[in-house]
Length: 132
Image 1: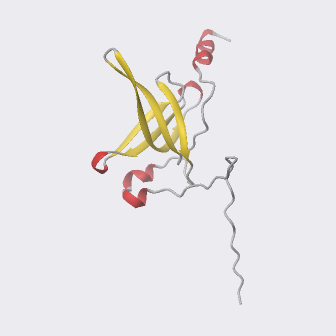
Image 2: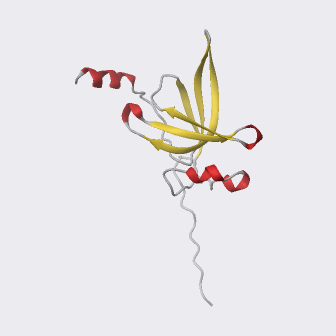
Image 3: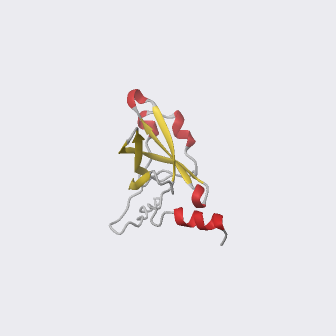
Protein backbone atom coordinates (compact mmCIF):
# COMPACT_ATOMS: atom_id res chain seq x y z
CA UNK A 1 0.00 0.00 0.00
CA UNK A 2 1.18 3.46 -0.76
CA UNK A 3 0.94 6.46 1.55
CA UNK A 4 -2.38 7.76 0.18
CA UNK A 5 -4.14 4.41 0.68
CA UNK A 6 -2.87 4.09 4.26
CA UNK A 7 -4.14 7.57 5.18
CA UNK A 8 -7.52 6.80 3.58
CA UNK A 9 -7.83 3.44 5.34
CA UNK A 10 -7.09 4.83 8.79
CA UNK A 11 -9.73 7.58 8.34
CA UNK A 12 -12.54 5.26 7.19
CA UNK A 13 -15.21 4.65 9.81
CA UNK A 14 -15.68 1.04 10.81
CA UNK A 15 -19.40 0.98 11.61
CA UNK A 16 -21.58 2.95 9.22
CA UNK A 17 -25.32 2.21 9.14
CA UNK A 18 -26.90 1.15 5.86
CA UNK A 19 -28.74 4.20 4.53
CA UNK A 20 -30.70 4.48 1.29
CA UNK A 21 -32.62 7.26 -0.43
CA UNK A 22 -36.01 7.64 1.23
CA UNK A 23 -34.77 6.79 4.71
CA UNK A 24 -35.67 9.14 7.55
CA UNK A 25 -32.44 9.75 9.47
CA UNK A 26 -31.23 11.71 12.47
CA UNK A 27 -27.66 12.98 11.93
CA UNK A 28 -25.59 14.16 14.92
CA UNK A 29 -22.97 16.68 13.80
CA UNK A 30 -20.21 18.25 15.90
CA UNK A 31 -20.35 22.06 15.52
CA UNK A 32 -17.41 24.27 16.55
CA UNK A 33 -18.30 27.77 17.79
CA UNK A 34 -15.21 29.66 18.83
CA UNK A 35 -13.51 27.47 21.44
CA UNK A 36 -16.66 25.48 22.28
CA UNK A 37 -17.98 22.34 20.63
CA UNK A 38 -21.56 21.11 20.64
CA UNK A 39 -23.64 18.44 18.96
CA UNK A 40 -26.35 19.57 16.54
CA UNK A 41 -29.04 17.15 15.35
CA UNK A 42 -30.33 17.35 11.78
CA UNK A 43 -33.33 15.13 11.03
CA UNK A 44 -34.84 14.59 7.59
CA UNK A 45 -35.19 12.39 4.51
CA UNK A 46 -32.16 11.08 2.60
CA UNK A 47 -32.49 12.50 -0.92
CA UNK A 48 -29.40 11.01 -2.50
CA UNK A 49 -26.27 9.02 -1.79
CA UNK A 50 -23.17 9.59 -3.87
CA UNK A 51 -19.53 8.65 -4.24
CA UNK A 52 -17.52 5.81 -2.83
CA UNK A 53 -14.74 5.18 -0.37
CA UNK A 54 -13.66 8.17 1.68
CA UNK A 55 -15.58 10.58 -0.61
CA UNK A 56 -18.97 8.94 0.01
CA UNK A 57 -21.66 11.49 0.93
CA UNK A 58 -25.41 11.81 1.30
CA UNK A 59 -27.90 14.67 1.24
CA UNK A 60 -30.64 15.08 3.85
CA UNK A 61 -33.67 17.34 3.38
CA UNK A 62 -35.97 18.65 6.08
CA UNK A 63 -38.63 21.32 6.22
CA UNK A 64 -37.48 24.18 8.42
CA UNK A 65 -39.27 27.18 9.83
CA UNK A 66 -42.09 28.76 7.79
CA UNK A 67 -42.16 25.78 5.38
CA UNK A 68 -38.71 26.46 3.91
CA UNK A 69 -36.85 23.34 2.76
CA UNK A 70 -33.30 22.91 4.06
CA UNK A 71 -30.87 20.47 2.45
CA UNK A 72 -27.55 19.53 3.92
CA UNK A 73 -24.83 17.26 2.52
CA UNK A 74 -22.73 15.14 4.87
CA UNK A 75 -19.60 13.10 4.25
CA UNK A 76 -20.13 9.67 5.79
CA UNK A 77 -16.53 9.28 6.95
CA UNK A 78 -16.14 12.85 8.25
CA UNK A 79 -14.69 13.20 11.76
CA UNK A 80 -17.32 15.92 12.43
CA UNK A 81 -20.12 13.36 12.00
CA UNK A 82 -20.84 11.93 15.43
CA UNK A 83 -23.48 9.32 14.51
CA UNK A 84 -26.28 8.52 12.08
CA UNK A 85 -29.56 7.04 13.32
CA UNK A 86 -31.95 5.48 10.80
CA UNK A 87 -35.49 6.16 12.04
CA UNK A 88 -37.54 4.59 9.24
CA UNK A 89 -37.34 3.38 5.66
CA UNK A 90 -39.61 4.46 2.82
CA UNK A 91 -40.59 2.74 -0.41
CA UNK A 92 -39.06 4.77 -3.25
CA UNK A 93 -38.33 3.91 -6.86
CA UNK A 94 -35.66 6.50 -7.57
CA UNK A 95 -32.02 6.88 -6.59
CA UNK A 96 -32.29 10.66 -6.27
CA UNK A 97 -35.45 12.16 -4.84
CA UNK A 98 -35.20 15.62 -6.39
CA UNK A 99 -38.95 15.65 -7.02
CA UNK A 100 -39.45 16.29 -3.28
CA UNK A 101 -38.12 19.83 -3.77
CA UNK A 102 -41.28 20.85 -5.57
CA UNK A 103 -43.64 19.30 -3.06
CA UNK A 104 -44.85 20.60 0.27
CA UNK A 105 -47.15 19.34 3.00
CA UNK A 106 -48.88 16.02 2.51
CA UNK A 107 -47.68 15.74 -1.09
CA UNK A 108 -44.09 15.38 0.18
CA UNK A 109 -44.87 12.27 2.23
CA UNK A 110 -43.28 8.95 1.29
CA UNK A 111 -44.89 5.55 1.74
CA UNK A 112 -43.24 3.81 4.68
CA UNK A 113 -41.76 0.33 4.36
CA UNK A 114 -43.20 -1.98 6.95
CA UNK A 115 -40.57 -3.86 8.93
CA UNK A 116 -40.94 -6.96 11.06
CA UNK A 117 -39.14 -7.41 14.39
CA UNK A 118 -35.96 -8.77 12.78
CA UNK A 119 -35.50 -5.67 10.65
CA UNK A 120 -36.39 -7.39 7.38
CA UNK A 121 -39.04 -6.04 5.08
CA UNK A 122 -42.29 -7.93 5.02
CA UNK A 123 -43.85 -8.46 1.62
CA UNK A 124 -47.15 -6.72 1.19
CA UNK A 125 -50.01 -9.19 0.74
CA UNK A 126 -51.04 -9.69 -2.84
CA UNK A 127 -54.72 -9.49 -3.55
CA UNK A 128 -56.15 -11.57 -6.34
CA UNK A 129 -59.51 -10.61 -7.69
CA UNK A 130 -61.74 -13.31 -9.08
CA UNK A 131 -64.21 -12.52 -11.79
CA UNK A 132 -67.71 -13.67 -11.11
